[in-house]
Image (cartoon, rainbow, N blue to C red; front, side, top):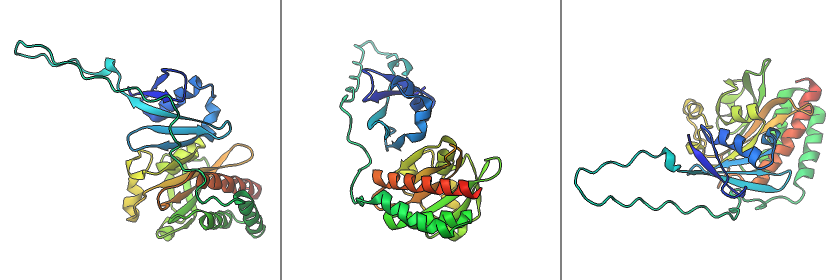
Length: 274
C-alpha cells in the first residue's frame, strides 16, 4: 500500500492509503483537521504523484510525497557466485521540511476588484434569469470574461443525485455537451460533486480523476481543468462548474473566482427550487 510523507506537517509524519485521496483523508487527522475540511481544500496533483493541498480558511499548506517503504520492497536476489554482496543503494534524501512554493501561482493578473465585479455582474444577470439553465449560462459568461480558458460547463444533479446534466456550456464542443448526462462517478466533475471539493488539475492527461473516454467521444483534448461545487446555503451540493484549458494552466485566483461565482449561482438556484 503506498506511503506518503507529509511535508509541512509533524516531523516524520507518514500516512498510507490505496491512493492519494485515502491517504489525504488520513493526513487530515494528523494535521488537526476534521473530515469536513475536505470541502474547502485546494488540491493539485503533480506529474510525479505529489499532492499539494492548502486550507484557505487557515492560510496553511502541505504536500504529500509518495515514498518507498523498505518493508514493502522485495528481498534481494541471491547471487549464484560467491562474492561480496552488492551494497544496498543509498536511500533517497528526505524531502526538505521547508514548505515548497505553492504549485498554483496566486496573484498573476488578478483584478483588484475581482469579487465585486462578479457580484455586480451576477446580480444584474440573475434579475432576468428565472430558469436554471439561463442562470448557469450567465455565470459561465461572467467567468469567461475574467478567466481565460477555452471551454466551460455547468452541470446540475438530477433527482436522486445519480446523474449530472450539462445545463450550460461554452467552447468548441458546447453544442455536443448540452443536455447530455454523465454518472456522478465520472471524471473531475463527479469527483467535485461527490466530495464538494474545488480542484485544479493542471496535467489532466496524467490524472486518474480525468475521464479520458469523454474526450475521445467528443474528439477533444482536456489539458487542464478547474472544477468547483455548487454548494447551496443548506450545504447540499447541487452540481458543479468546470473551466477547461487555460493557457499555461489555472492559477489560484482563478479557483477563487470560480468558487465565489459558484456560491452565488448555488444560492440563486436554491431560491429557484432548481
